[in-house]
Image 1 (cartoon, rainbow, N blue to C red):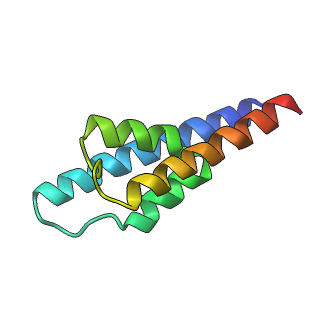
Image 2 (spheres, rainbow, N blue to C red; image 1 turned 180 degrees about the vertical axis):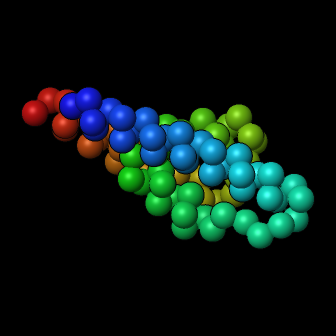
Length: 87
């Protein structure tokens, strides 16, 4: 369980930082982090960090369907977490 917590924390930190990096790149008009990468990080356990990064950096908050897909990834994360903790 400890390893799982470390991995979950790590992917959330990476997702959070990816949103910050992408926002910075957006402001300076440089090449960006692909949306697919941001959503993949969220889907594979980093939804909390992704949502936190989205709000803190005010990045991709109005873009659709990105926002809906991000919330969908968060719902999947929650379902998996509940399933793992209840088993």
